[in-house]
Image 1 (cartoon, rainbow, N blue to C red):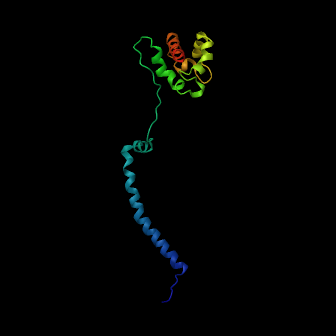
Image 2 (cartoon, rainbow, N blue to C red):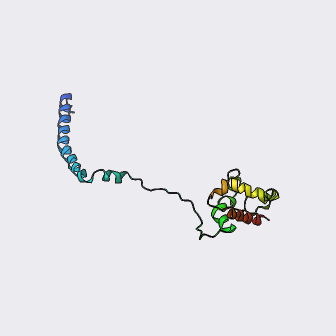
Image 3 (cartoon, rainbow, N blue to C red):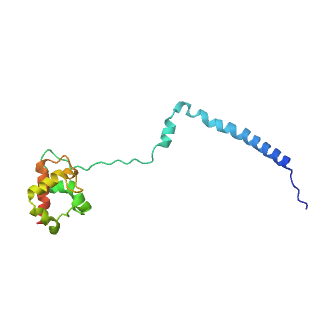
Length: 147
């Protein structure tokens, strides 16, 4: 069998014919989808680009019935996050060696540090809604665990 070669003009003609056929078939098909969104407006587009999930962060707050919360309740809802694990240098609850110098400085010093914050601890442990009595109860609770 002999190999038959096509000339460049033949290849060009075939390419143009294929392109015209594709345009005649594809162009009408592409116009079918254009009429759908005329009544929907941009809502369909917005639905397609919405995020898959949303992240919302909320602060956990112990629900109060109007009465002052006791030290254990405040510790469990506010202080435990750092003082149970020792995060950011917080003295662990019940660690007598870590609490000894703090206790020796006096309860006024402990309460002042809890009120104003110290190191990585924010003022009032990050719970700005704590009253002075509640803050004192939380400090007393943690000191009691270290004795």
